[in-house]
Length: 261
Image (tube, rainbow, N blue to C red; front, side, top):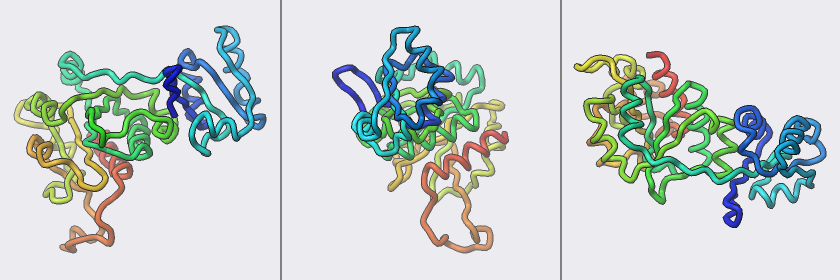
């Protein structure tokens, strides 16, 4: 939940706040916790006291109001609302130069899915995530921060006005991989797909909307499309018992294959 008056974002969840304490304690302006978890945050309280920060014990009901969720796990840290950096050519050039892979989210609307993707990306060492400035795209919220379980501290999130234009700009610089149910190549082919006619290049992987997948205009600007095969696919079974994996689950499989390369 955002506090628009103070320009703050509530970060909640035990593991999430602990990761924030470990990596960026300076971000925390105010800290609230229940009596049960108070002993776990003594060190952070001392840091806040030294820097004139605010901390206080509160009942669980107050933390629910502060965070907007019952899933606060007894602790809420208020930080300055994050500003998402616009992506520019200097940043993408550094990806190419340093051979860094990136992920483009094409209108992932569910905050929990967004947070889970961030968590998986951080786990597999993928640092760059791009989101479009689109109402259908989830952004950094209390829910996505909590579900990311500290992953927000390990990734860079950038914004673009047009996903298609980004893909056009990266033609020949990165291998642009789209995920699609009608793809012919399997996600296990990702390591070999990174070796194009201009040598080994980093990947820009597009994950699509929960209901409709990647848009047609985005699909047209991909070098390759890949699919996660289902049980029976190799035996010629035309469809699985369900249509597809949740996009957050799918991202973990894709990121694992990227790591293998």
